Image (tube, rainbow, N blue to C red; front, top):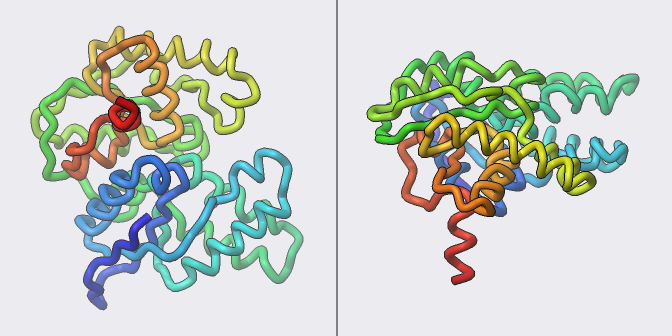
Length: 265
């Protein structure tokens, strides 16, 4: 991802943006939207050199690699007051699991816990840490929100995005049935068990369509890519957006999944 830094001011917290692999490689606009929102909350934004959060390795039992990636992140963000992640999945890896990787290590556990303590999922940071209650954005569409498993169950992200979305001019927010149910992505789960994953996302897409929404929003790009792919394969007209894109009033790019189709034509 292209380096982004705001003009530093001494009285503003220094926030390191952890962009995530999926944002960097498939949807950089989400990173820029996140940076815009963090700046709007009164912070300086920096994007140190970074790589994977280590979750794929951790979930596969490769703790050696996961520890190496965690140490890399700890070092990269050492000068930041906060680390903010536009993903409940990657956020959960840093906040909940990075300290686990160093349990029993007297030299590294403290550093891992201190790092975890300054990490926050993006929307939780804006609302719970910075006290943001509204945004200056417009989106004249009907939207529904999908709660990602990691953001909801590991980090308690539920009401925060909905509160900010209420302030978006022209947006009608409707709740789909089973908004808290998994979309079937699950990181490596969708690769190991594609048939089960497809069955799960089929139900999710049916609930999205039944809500009458024009857009499905979420805080995890993995979920949104999975949902957008199923919507596209079924010929549905519902768009998929990361919630940061709506809150930051940055909807110039095509919905998730459409840009790639356009490049093939």
